[in-house]
Image (cartoon, rainbow, N blue to C red):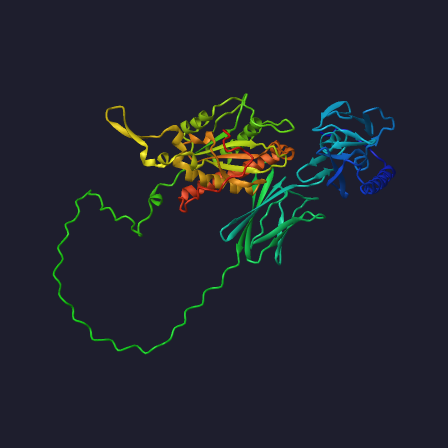
Length: 572
């Protein structure tokens, strides 16, 4: 929020202001060389981006909290520290606007308005320190130009400048690779190949490139943002041959640049060498030997079934290939928790039940408007829904895919990243895994007679779909990894109760760790939620298209022993 204060300067005043501004920044730069006081740990600096360039805002860690000294904010943000200091209190001013800080108090008065900070200001040896969120929460209220703190990237953006957020993800599939860039807001880039690299240029003042966990391979070695220009450089590997690119619109005023990478074509095989030889004289033709006529086979009667081929006939397609492709017409979305069951919560007060419901609503709107599929939500408001009832809602509405949305938590504040789960076969004993043992009972129908129905116990409904669920979960993890930070184990198996009764391919997604302050801010931001929706939307499109073609390759059912902060026995 920017207070509508208008300042009008004469040309002479404007020149004087600019000169004073540059002198302030120069003096502020000298302050960066100061040695931190005892008890402080120097931390990675924030980067202040303005129309005049870039500056560094040095931060320190005090009692595990990332703080910045107030005297290092005065120059860049035109703040004045009052000479009259009261005990445990400090007053700042900018023009006629006043900020009052109280030591060890999490509420700050900004021109008469109370602003909450995640941790209180601290006075140490006469110097005052504030949490870095002070920049993003308090200072915009007294600034006459836009001001934004981006915790994830460590940027402070001030002024009417364009600094798009760019999330890069790379995925290798067989011999080819897929490099995706989600750009918010939408600023279409240009791509230029220079020898063994791509130079991707954005029409912007600077870039906010999210950290990328890219594993180098033979197609892509690495990527990095230029610190002085809005440019991303992609270093190509030795086997890179060609590429194609496309820019797709995305939700939330974003675009997605997708670059398909292909390896260099292998040289054609050499033709086999042949040696010309004189043809041999053919032997005399043998006389045909008359044979007794074969007994005539009587034709099969009309309507008789064709003879069953021998098992293992290599010329026959597998039964899975003969099955009708699975049509995807309806999606069930399960926003985790609700009502008195709040789920996990973040240090800033964000609740899991609120995050999952908001993402579910956004995903429903995107599916209905862009894909035209039917969507059912297991809850549409802040209400309690039992775990088994969630799967029942999906079953009764004949959903073809089920996805349950959650956010994670950990005792480690640094834990981060999304995770995707599907049900583990280990939950079923050997007898339960034998689908042929499922009972089939005759059910009377209207008008007489009966029909045979498979009777599947509730706790075994998902058993028939474990392989398809593995494929569905793998697709979700794959698409999310192009848009979101993922945990080291992005795809896992776990015994989640909410998946057991689902009579369709089902997966559970932990969207991130709300216990991490940085990720809590992401999970509650429209930009990050849009990236989640885009990833899930692309997952549905991919799975639908692959299902329409018919799945050919089997899906491995064991991704390995999970190493996750979520206890294996946690019921979702």
